[in-house]
Length: 103
Image (cartoon, rainbow, N blue to C red; front, side, top):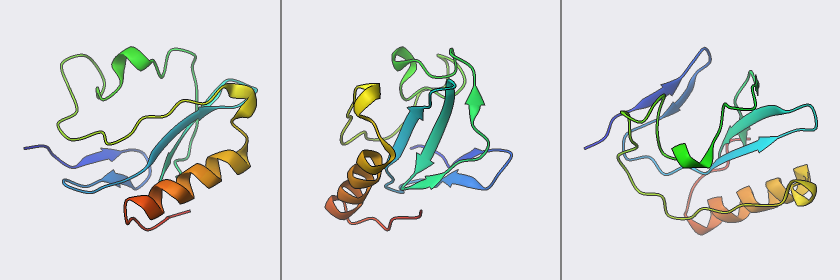
């Protein structure tokens, strides 16, 4: 079950059966960024409605649910979510789950 998910316009792919650390964060200008195992997806999105926890694991709309496993989910208060903290969490999660850090 499941399928490969590609996020355009770049080459940002989550392959079927692949473990990855996905990180979403918002900067002070309300740009939303996504990282795959430390590799930042470009471009960012400047849209306050682009990421909502009620749609976690949903692609595009409520009819496209994620078909896989979410091993861990963490949330950090915005003021504490510095670049260094995100890097440390990504490094830890990659090591813990035996994944290569991409960025």
